Length: 212
Image (cartoon, rainbow, N blue to C red; front, side):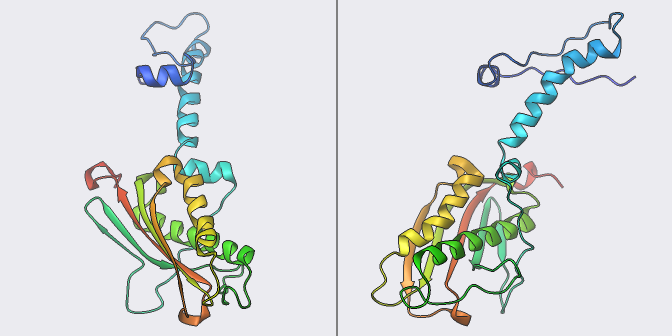
């Protein structure tokens, strides 16, 4: 006969959820039968749902974010490399909903607002590659660094504000684990006249801890 698992929450978990969850105890069902079991199980299921919503993949749903398909490589390189507990993600750029490239030069024909949209889109494309490489965004323990380059005129000086849009998204999705070191610079040109590119480095779960 199927038995529900016994769950013994840690003090931290019990405190966090204000005692709403208690261990399941092995006991003979009363006349309520399955209803009595469900009374004990529902708090456990609720805890699982709350914890799942607090993970990166769960946050995507809460934020109403649907990641695009991963970008293919456009040259002799791979989008991401995993080695041990480290993940390197190559340059990613912004795309429109129809998949076309977001192009232009800040300070010339692209405003700060449009550049920020390109940065957020680039971060979404980057997250799609991370998920493709690891199977789930939940495998990321820490985003350690973001490197952003902005296609800009010499007079343009809002590079930090532009790349902030990508950083903001990472914090929205990963929480404190999305807070990273960063470099944001301007360049005279980018391939295909892209507005910007970002790349990332992350610490991930050890191989043995990741589901196969």
